[in-house]
Image (cartoon, rainbow, N blue to C red; front, side):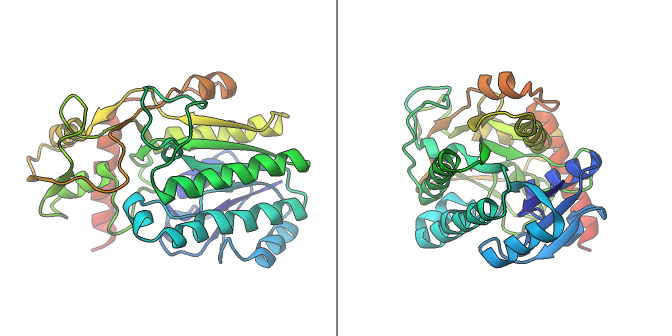
Amino acid sequence: MTVLVTGGAGYIGSHMVHRLCDAGETVVVLDNLTTGFDWALPAAAQLIQGDVGDEELVCQIIREHGVGAIVHFAGSIVVPESVADPLGYYLNNTVKSRTLIAAAVAENVKHFIFSSTAAVYGAPETMPVTETTPQLPVSPYGSSKLMTETMLRDTAFAHDFRYVALRYFNVAGADPQGRTGQSTKGATHLIKVACEAAKGKRSHMDVFGTDYDTADGTCVRDYIHVSDLVKAHSDALAYLRDGGDAIIMNCGYSRGFSVLEVLDSVKRVSGVDFEVRLSDRRPGDPPQIVAASDLVRSTLNWQPDHEDLDTIVRHALDWEAALAKRNR
């Protein structure tokens, strides 16, 4: 049966679409192309330009294409932006997810994979965070995703509907084959921004906050290669098709790197000593967050292939070079 990928022309979504098509799946992509790109998709995938909040359209797609599973990536993802525009985030990430879930139930789609986030944990006091760590988000972004997790839980209780929610940590890197990568202008992800600085696309690199309670004073994050993340999604789809129960799992490597350590890696791999400027903290940034990934590894038998920071950085740099050629 067909897999519907919402937000499939975006950064993570396009990697998922390539993986599904590589596996011989029939894929339909629903994307409004606000931040996605049609050229990032393989020829085998069908793109429908539209909004995930359009329930009539979603129901039509499910019926016409025989959709048996939904992988939901569509949404807004920038923490500081969510602080400035909370209602926009609750609309895009919560209200529209509710519409999508309702369409799935109405059209008898039983399998649903949700793109959640480590931001649901807020600023946890102990590391690494497990799936049972209290969920106390400190940004509307985290809250909007946690609300969707709650809707999925309640829907699975009431209907013949099962889901996997994957709480991502910091996603980075690009397709090792160079087919897609993070392409949105004005991106805020650290490795993306640092690679742009190394390639001369930015004049300098800002570090937001140097007084955190960490080894070097900068924020610590668990960085996961985008290809390993979508591999977890593929494993989650197989898990649901095999009858697996609804579950929420972290996706990370259980290893944290500080902002300064990441910048050192980008400088080392690129060979470019770009300018770094130290700035004040941004709202909504927890000092440290690192995943406990035991559950996803044991439940899905997930085995990452790119569990190395320099490899992630190298693939991100390669994509920046490819993107520069494309945009000439």
